[in-house]
Length: 217
Length: 121
Image (cartoon, rainbow over all chains, first blue to last red; front, side):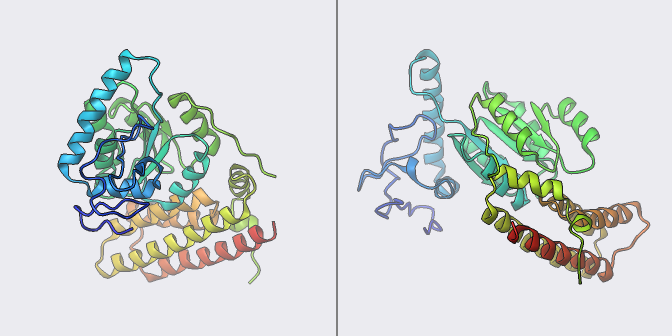
């Protein structure tokens, strides 16, 4: 899928050009606020995560702003309508180590929400602002922008229901742990190497979901 | 060369990954291939940092390599990378090509040991 040109939004199913630029939000989910193709009616919620992530990466500022306003409005509506459709949780993972992404993707494959990925600090903070995930898991040491700065920035404007977890780099756990809680106000702290069990427990606790535990056959 | 898996790999970490993946050998093999290819890229960047004489950048790359090595149980690579990182940061070692080579050799041993272990079930 070529999304190199920002104004050429192609539908992932019928590849119609500009399919998403002028249409309405889908109604099948209240979480992702994705769009419906005006050509074939395809809902973008069913597109691959990487497609959606790329889509929002190149989306016009006006569209991003429209989405933000819509989500804010929805958030208000949801708070006064307890019976409305529950949101699907969104997790953002920021790490420059691709093995971490592979492991976390595998651990969380059954959690029923969406996982989006960033590989440096700047990209991670931008995605956190655009996608507004419930849970941000970030490495402490990152290229371009430090993970602890990301945590502090996200905590500067707190939002109920959003959690920031810092995964420390190796070896320096205790120092980073204290600093992460006291200075950068993270909600949780994970040490590397990533423990699948701890990660699963953390996601279940923070997002109130039940993950399927895999057992080796 | 014959390698002893326990000296090169953290077998308990590999077993945790195996359990986490539900015993999916293909996932583990893909994960290790991803690790090896990412590590080779880090080694290339280490060589580049030597050419521009940037020991701090070199130490940071060694740190990154140690971290991802621990994630997949490549114990020996992690230990060597970590020792080099600390020595460079502490000022007792000025990195050169022999250090990159040493890590590269350990990476090769880890790759071979993991291949043997993962493909034999």
